[in-house]
Length: 555
Image 1 (spheres, rainbow, N blue to C red):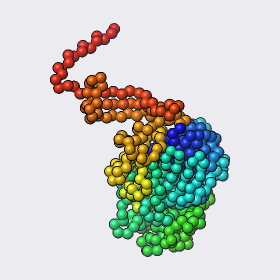
Image 2 (cartoon, rainbow, N blue to C red):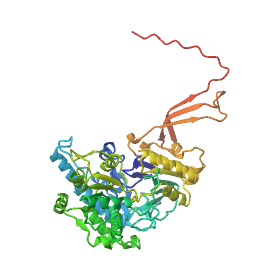
Image 3 (cartoon, rainbow, N blue to C red):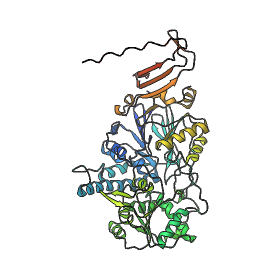
Image 4 (cartoon, rainbow, N blue to C red):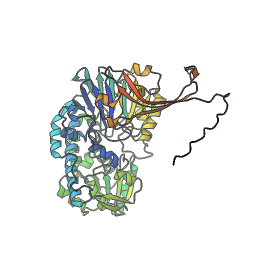
């Protein structure tokens, strides 16, 4: 039976990354991300998983961000019990991320029940801390750049991707072909970590496209001057600066930049707080990972008097506002949850304060609303006016930009047979598809949610005349055990420009429209079911047809 790849998340959206490889009786899930952002995406977290979780044999993780690991406890809750393969530092960070997620799920459900803002009488958590604790023992570390033998002729290998500590691209070799999953790719250089490395190429490549349609700005003069400027102005007017930051990696980068600014005299020596237990715990992991960090990294200036807020009582005291002008770093980075919400409630109505957004803000998040100029923000069932200054520092991103993504694809050896642009909103993904096709000569496609393709060698993919190989090689999701509601008919329009006849009638110039759903038979053959419409051009010599009288309406 053919090896297939199913896109269960991260397709046409920047969240919920999940990719299912089906190899005979084996089901291997690459990443298990939580959908975040708009409600229609978040509802997918509650839907039945397309295959029974207890039939998944392995999970492979690229890194420890929630949109790549946050769904794991749901799988365990519904029967998955196999190994979860990841690098050692991804394991260490996933412990922190998942425990925090379980706690927040429980707390938010209880807050919604007590506060009355849920439409459910008894709001429930997607999973709880017990589900998380059952998940953690399954996390199994792997080595960098060494093949992991998964049995049945399947090998997996992790290569540093330079996004966060422990992040890697994963190349999976199957008996029928190879697939490379980029995971989230860092920039050519990382402010804190060792630079990313180039993995071995594969027949099929999945590359993230978060910033596929843009280039990161280079500093005109001093780096991160947007942040330095707003810190100076805010402290001068007696306010405080709130920096919503992802607990893992972004907090470390912000601290590194603030440390250099203080050392160079660009900002005043004002108190700096990290109010996030998860960020503080992640910082401990980074401190222990000297072999994975840049050799020139120096955080001594800021670490000497950094104030880490770990307990709930300490957080309430800080949130009360009696700390004076200061810089507060708190998660989450898109203001979707966490202690940052308490700070936003208190700080947004005061024009002396500032909020600095330091990373990607997905559609539907509070961070995106602030970025788009919202004058009020809804939090915990209440609206809060926005009077504080909102600033964006675009230099913090550790996602590769369009040119860096194209360069990564171009550097792969051997050359890919087909590239799928994933983990991006529609416009960035489409822009990256066009650039990869134009600049590398490799065919690229934006996959659809629930789409299933056959994994084949690059030479087979490249030999096809069709512009988009997966359309011809797509298979029915039901044939590989994927829920029928994930199936999507393929609508294709084409024009016939070759000399073809049908019963003596020339089809040259005909417009062919198809609406087909692929189905795989037991013998492996592919059946396309649906409709094909062929519209023939009118011959020049043909007389104008008489109009057909319309029938009289029935009484």
